[in-house]
Structure formats: C-alpha cells, structure tokens
Image 1 (cartoon, rainbow, N blue to C red):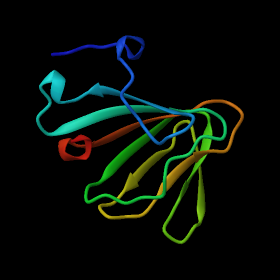
Image 2 (image 1 turned 60 degrees about the horizontal axis):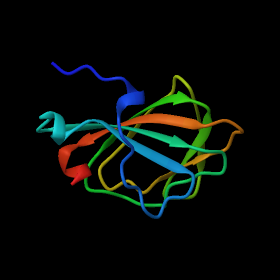
Image 3 (image 1 turned 60 degrees about the vertical axis):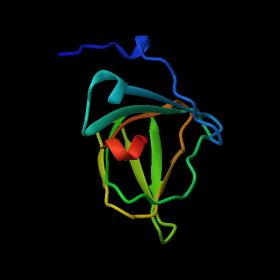
Image 4 (image 1 turned 90 degrees about the vertical axis):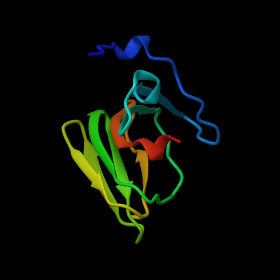
Length: 114
C-alpha cells in the first residue's frame, strides 16, 4: 500500500502547456502496472491543446471552474464535484474559465503516460 500527500509529489515535465501543471500521483514508479492517477492544475486562462488519444480518461474536478470543449467546439461547463468520462479517440480540451485555479484528477491507463 502507498499513501501520498499531493504536496509531496513532484511536478512532471509538461512542455508546451502554459499555465498548467501536472503531478503523477500514482503511476509506474509506484508499481502501478495498469493505471495512472494524475493531478492537473490550471491557472486562470490556462488550457490544454485540442487533442484525442486511443485511451479513455476519467476526470474528477477538484477545484475551480472550467470547461471541456468537444469535437464540435461546444463548451461544457465544469466545477468542483463534477465527473467526466472522455472516450477513446474523443477529441477534447479543457480550459480554466474562472478566476481561481481549475484543478482536476485524471485517471488513464498506463499507456496514456508512456
């Protein structure tokens, strides 16, 4: 069993993303052979690139307000307590639309972090 505090988890290299940080809370370095739990924090104005992957994402919003933008450009509001399932190959991106950090946990299969 592994127990961690987010404050003790180092920040991962996240080139190409302005105003976004990522921490790999549980992953291969911890012996997780199938899933990876990541914690993202977006400063106001932060966004991810519009993209798709061949694996699903499970997302739990932890703080702030933002949107997930689908393949048609439709914005879907998100706030603390919301949960999001992004299917394999579903185009998307997330953006902070608030004035506070927009934080979320994102769980992916191990191949999503390799």
